[in-house]
Length: 240
Image (cartoon, rainbow, N blue to C red; front, side, top):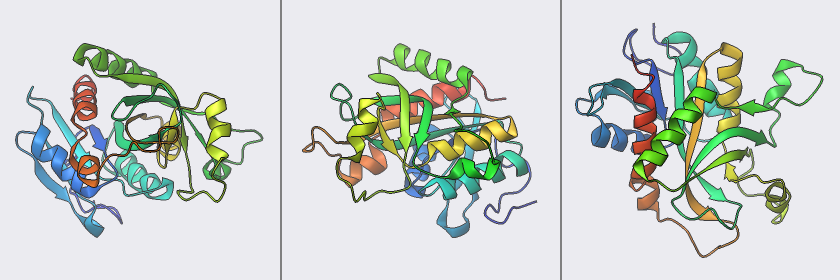
């Protein structure tokens, strides 16, 4: 049955879903990397597609929208309503580290946050959200095989895009955090709570140290091929 935010039919989604934030990017991924993509959902303009990779593996692609509440809703409904077993977020981020350059791919093995997302679990401590180990290893192997520049480590999932403290990022950078985005912590928490698999792959499109380096809007929407190649290769290892 369709969920409140996804109007696909049972069986429309593959067991592995690539999840960009932007619906236009989801459409581009489906048209570029799948050979027979079929649109399966479009509520609120959030597009989802299912098709086969060029190696014959069935996978899906669906947008998440922006922010942790949005990816939290869509990932939960995919995991619980459509039998999805693994979600690989494919997004963009800003780099906090000197040696992480524009268009490098980040394999986010863990996520920190300034959000109160984990408050819903009523824990007596701080929950450390992490990627699925097997997905992370598969992404590492794919990036290495493809010759894609990559880094692995911790990412910050922020609730605030325009931070009133322009130097707050430096405190995270001092702890080795690779950069900042806005979705992976909620995705990792949902996957952990529901005993599913999740991974966040990011392409660097902004730089907090080298501030003159910025990807164009066109590059953000369509110029992330290296990351998607890694994501597709990773997804193929887990697709049924």
